[in-house]
Length: 401
Image (cartoon, rainbow, N blue to C red; front, side, top):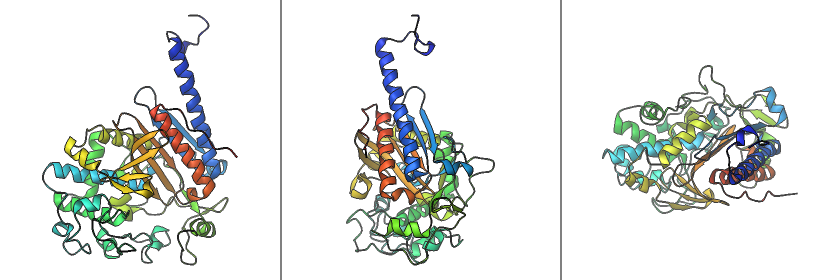
């Protein structure tokens, strides 16, 4: 078959057409990644595994960030609340081993540590229906979140400053996302096994799956000699403008770190150890897709526990529903499963299809910065297109103007 490039020799006409369509889709995805970076995301890593063939791997960043670090697809990244899926998987492994019961009251495991713990079950912690509020924006904790105060918080201390939901809700009444739920679950895991959480994750998840670039962070270190993404957030004045419609910050609140162009701050060195079971994992796009694929394809949990994990409660803020450490998200090209994460300088979305055969990761080097309207729209267009590319569906129309 002369006149055809070597990569297509032996391919049928239909195969050639599919290759051209796939190449066009990948090109559009790369273009959207650069647009997102230049519109406020600052830098993005996109990795799409269609379940066959070579994964699509894209790293794009806006020009001025290159002086700090050249973003690469295999850079280590703070996965933030994606950690919750790992913690949920560990709890459900113990359920399968009859060491923990989802109906157990929290008081059984953590006597006196959780307000109302006699009425809150392990399942309510997992699906955020406990009635607990969140400690993140409390006056005591906010300086740690922004890096203005360097303090090592123990999970017991975080539970002690956790407020009730506002307005109050009884345990089991409604969904309301709270990091305190997973601080409690981390303590339950340690008490039920007699092992530290970092060791449990290594023994049961990252080790068996060969996730060599993944670990639970104990400080701001990304690992000796390993390349990692640089993270950024808006400076205090810009941050106040972004959050003004929904959150009123105390005067002078801003992230600690070196100033960067266009009203940004380098937040890479803010210590994330407080996040622990609620969001302390460091990983890469490839490693995390490996975990999500193993989980959703049934390699980590028996069928009964996978069914429990996929039992959803309505969660409007998540664009779908929430199970046990797992989000069910509706996109223009279909339903996907996974989680999102956000910490100073880092936000992420990692999903699979229903079978776990295909996966997608979109990692972004800012969290609050991508909440500005134009940045949010560009980032959503990128995520939706990446999901459609993963599912092999026609790409959604790109907004113009």
